[in-house]
Image (tube, rainbow, N blue to C red; front, side, top):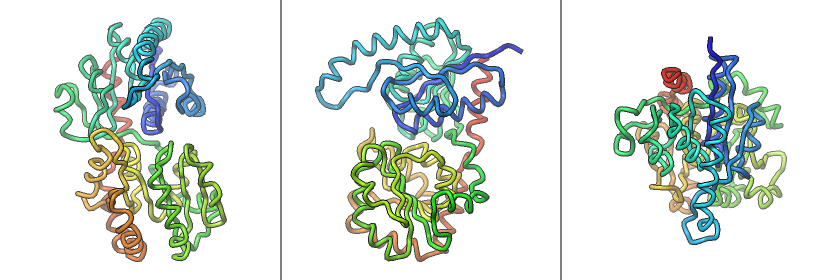
Length: 361
């Protein structure tokens, strides 16, 4: 059998990196002697996270456009030209069979260079509202794997395949890990555990909310795993105590999900897909600072199926403590949310995506 080579690119946040790693892991299972190379943006978190997952990565000198006039923006044309040249070099040397992009700035020049070289490309779009990079790349892509319906207004209809988002396969069976997770985090097995997820970089408004509500949680006999994000860790680590575990980043997502009874989360596409598989009661607090408010749309799709609770940032002051307390006391509601969100899970997404990639070999 031919020895295949794959280049994967996605980064900037965990939401782009982990789908790429999940796809690579599945390809490796099916093609054990294949070669893999990741391409990311220099100085972004993929430069650490991808090698930790066991893959080689090369960094491009690329960054996104800021919304205001900055020196960064003035450098953008130079960075883009340099990244396109470097991408061409990487492709020429590595000679991939297929190039896969999961979003983020680095995937732009790389997939553009691959398309120009006549190499098949696959886009994996996690969101209900695609970013500008994937919209531009879709014209030349061979297949576009999406997690939401009705994306024909952004992408060529004949290239779209509804697959769901790839998630870490270690999340498929978390119930069996609960006892181990409780010990791992030093939690009390008799208390309810609240898991707070603000995304890999952190969410300022969510962190402010948790800080304000901390005593309220503790008075209700709730223990907390609070992922505040690396941008905010220095501000919030002072709250670390036996019943409050403050962390900047979570390596063992399977353990935190296994330990959690209730989850507060942003509504990035990858998080939403993971939470469907995990099947725990969730309060979504979408970020209003993303393109086309797509986090609200991601969360609303779950709420419409009676699978989660949604609170906008503007409602937190007046509504949060009432909503949280009601959910904590209502075991029936928790069970109903868990069952409904689980119905929306697509645990085989990564296999379906790899099937699409195989068609191009």
